Each structure stands twice: as C-alpha cells, then as structure tokens.
Image (cartoon, rainbow, N blue to C red):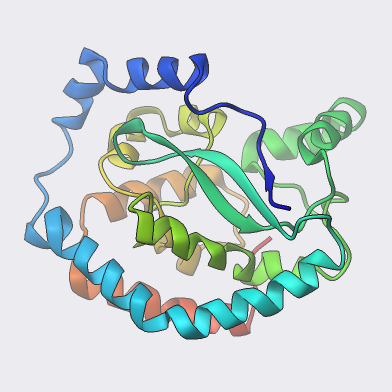
Length: 239
C-alpha cells in the first residue's frame, strides 16, 4: 500500500493554483527571468533521462533496501505529497515514508502547544528534533536518501536531477519576488541549496540560492552539484 496525500490535484485547489500561476501578473514576473540557454531549454532534460536510466539498476536496488527499512516502521514505506512544479503545475512528489501517520495533523498539534516550535517552523519550515520522525528513519532524512524515489518524478518530467527543492503552496508564498525564478524551471532532487546550506536554518538563504541557480543553469554547474551531493549522502548534515 502506498500512502498518498488526500489533496485532489485535479480538484478546485489545483484549478485555483493553475489560475493564479498563469495569471497576467505571473506572466509579467516570468519575463523578468533571464533568457535560458540551450542546455536549460532542452539539453538538461536529455541529461536527466540519460543519467536516470544509467543509474536505474543501482538506484532501484537501493530504494528496495530503503523500503524494507521504512516498511518496518510505517504501513506503506512510500509517501506522495503535492508539490508545485514548473509553470505552477502541481504533481505528486514521492519519498520514503519516514514520519508517523497523520504527520500534518501532528505538526499542527505541536505548533499549537509549543510557541517556540511555531516560531522555528515559521522561520525555517523545519523542526529540530522533530518528534514525528520514525525510529531509525532520521538518517534517511538527514542524508536525503528518503528522496531517491523522486527518480520516478524525474523520468516522468515532473522534476529534474538538479533544481530548487520542490515546495508546497504555503512555502511558495515565502519566495516573494523569487516565485518567478522557482516556476521557470523544474524542481530538483538535489540542488545548490542542498549542497551548500542544507543544514542551515535560514529559509531566506534557501530562496536566494534557488533564485541564483534558476538564473544560471549550466551543464557544468549541474555536474558539479551532482558530484557535491555524493559526500552529503555519506556525511549527512541536513535536518
């Protein structure tokens, strides 16, 4: 059994998001994003597919092993949650399930009863020592291994190997004028923020790095970010 978010992407919320992101204001914002080169417009997608297909045998085996670990703690082992992709299109982003059931409701309960946690969440969209994380699953989250199932999102065209971290509706608002930069490209499994400041609690810095990447997408840059991701998997520093 695969756990999925109850939100209907084809329902009213999805229609509303499509309307907002394709409004005239959104189009004006997109025109402010620098013109993308040949690699960003087409080569990046070919690169994603080639790398994913080459790594698929090893990644598939790794995901199977991680699923066994996650399944021992959670009913499904996999989790899908709505995220916002290129041009505001919403998609189901896949991860290993590393949190308890009804984690969203548990989060609300925590924020309501702990003002300090509420302030931390508002500033970073994270909780230190998050009590919702299942036993033995903290390493998967810190290393980012819980996000390996997103290779399916890359093959589908929802995501890229490298790009901004996929966000929810609530998070996108925090990008402010950087919304256009986020929506101009596909979100990624890894990215500039993930390899330079993943453990940093400042969300403003994350937005800055995502905007910086969106405005300077290159093949060499993507290769460097992918290579920089490998040590993170071995020395997890994320929260």
